[in-house]
Length: 184
Image 1 (spheres, rainbow, N blue to C red):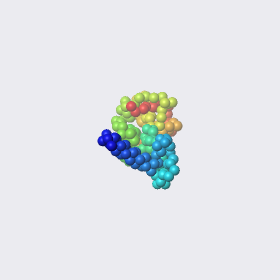
Image 2: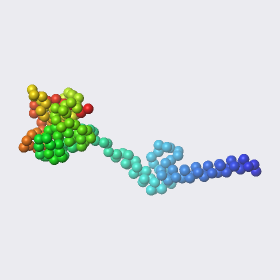
Image 3: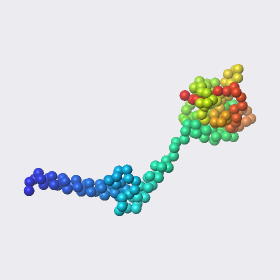
Image 4: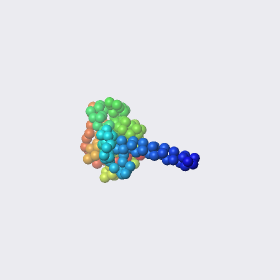
């Protein structure tokens, strides 16, 4: 027999053995070579492989969606409900108004805001009431300028540290002298 032919037959036999092993392994884990998109294990596959395939499919379907920016901000703001007001404080258990917004943004998003309601205005882009989303900032003003800031909770409500002797709470927006800002 010719040496070239013998070498070719030997390579063919090795390829056949390798492909057979790969096919056997793929069938054992529930992958059908006839239908790459098939989800069911072929007849004769082990029950363990079928169960493994079902578990991985279930994990893909139940993967949790990451909370939105607003949800993360409101979650942190809600956790501060009942914490005491203290002028100049920025948490974790005492706050003034800008200290609360500063704390909420830092914990929820890693965003660093200045500790002053007037300075926080400079870190936002002014938006309309219609465009406001939960987690945006609400600035209260009078003729002297901005005097208070809060986290918008949606539905004309805010989370804020209202003042001396009071505690962090959710409240209705009480005046028309306010505007909304989205942190840039």
